[in-house]
Length: 251
Ligand code: 6PG
Image (cartoon, rainbow, N blue to C red; front, side):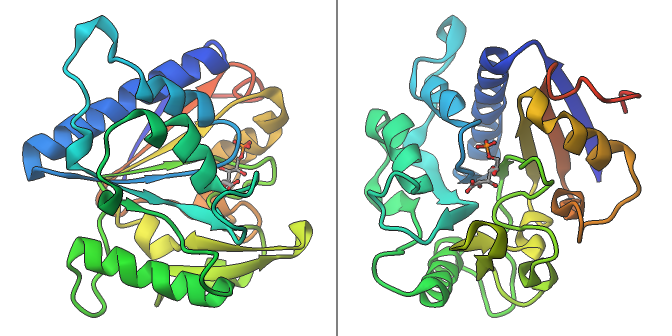
């Protein structure tokens, strides 16, 4: 696994650099495979990135070929798609409503049709269908964009939760005890089969967790994002100076 850390000045620079990275990954995937299989995360950090991505590419670079992108979510809260907490709603508002991506290429978790477990099963089937997977094959995303919580969680893989041990299914439902909510999440086998994983971390509130994740011995039960290690892919970190402020060495 290749590892890459970029430190940028602040949240605005993070959004710009993240959008540049996503554009580059989409262009590379479309050049090589005529389409890009892209999984996005929710939360607050990536919103500005998605808004930047929806705008014109800087410097008059080629427009992003959205018609060739299949978009998925790395995780979803088990709320209706128009709920304020819905990751899909945030991605729709910040990005999808502004770029012409065919609706059939947007793969959200159909939370309103099923309970959390049913939604996870339906989502895994949708992923398998979109990738044209045979039984027991894992999807290989061109890019998975992740965030990191101040507890070291990523997607909806939270410390000490059973979802961390999932090795059979593409997506699972997980009851996040600390949040008292149900979520649906892609699992480690999917994340670690990606060509590229890019983790965005912003703010001093994440500094202690980022230092532990990057410098302490691996303990994914305690810091789940340490379990994201793409076997045949690259793991990129794009962090701002506030989040990097506790790092004692730059790997
Ligand atoms: C979610 C995300 C989650 C997020 C982290 C960081 O559904 O909330 O997928 O994993 O990336 O919690 O969230 P912030 O960007 O809001 O700090």
